[in-house]
Image (cartoon, rainbow, N blue to C red; front, side, top):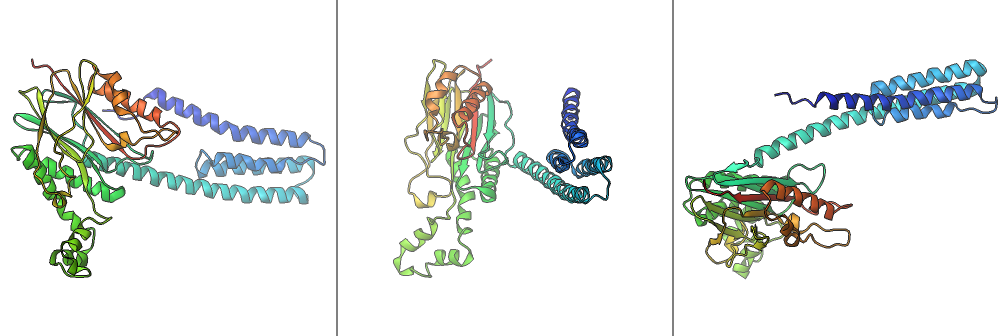
Length: 396
């Protein structure tokens, strides 16, 4: 497969580059002619420094140096035409032009090196994202699926939001989640949750077992954030405040550095028009019905976020909701709900998504992304946003 840009696109890029390069040479020619024809007490030579300076903004050091050389030669032509090269005024103008050309050539070199490093880092980030957050297939069993990931910063390609799907013999299991925090720690936690889900989704018989497995995979990391000495004190009950009993251990377990992941874990059977949902502190999915309604799937007994089950008593329970053919289920992270406009108003997801009922999943996400970015126009997303749309197809 040819992954290069289309020929017309490459030709257009070359044309733009040539048009840009014509600007500094036209400037040199214009300043040279006007300076030669100007009165003796008028000197336009200093304007020639603009030519290499402009070139350094869009071309590399070689072309910048070449334009600087042409500008120096043009200044020499002006000097010999008007007086002589040994004229003190023109001599200082030539020296200043040479020095500035050298400086801007050096800056062009540094900019080129920085751009290459940035391109390499973006390539690594994209590769890491594809490894950690694998794209979902368009069709999984009787489901049609679409997904999208919006980074809060334009240069960021990966974060703590996650989603995945796994196919079992009789159903499709999905997870969407949001890791608390940002940066590499959040990415590592997201990779841990996704790895545990992919490992257990085919093995656990029900959602309760799957969620308990995810909790067991995430919970040990709570001791890693405090350091070995503090973790040992928390386990043995020693250290400062040991006399406070349970209060000391809970204080270390629920400190500010504690990590957790909100998640929604679903099981969608092939043979029944229903879905089973366990919500671990995650925003409720929206069910887009064929009659034009958007219904939040609020669970009666939500589970605590992954990593915090040890702090809350209660068993994990799965709740069943109707999911008929033609309905579309929208999963999302709180980055969608927390998007603000210039007035500080949050994005009204439930109100907006009603307009797109009856559309297939990819169309729903296309409209949602466009509307979300229009809502925050002039601003950036406060947090990364992940969205997955799922449609149950009619049985053949």
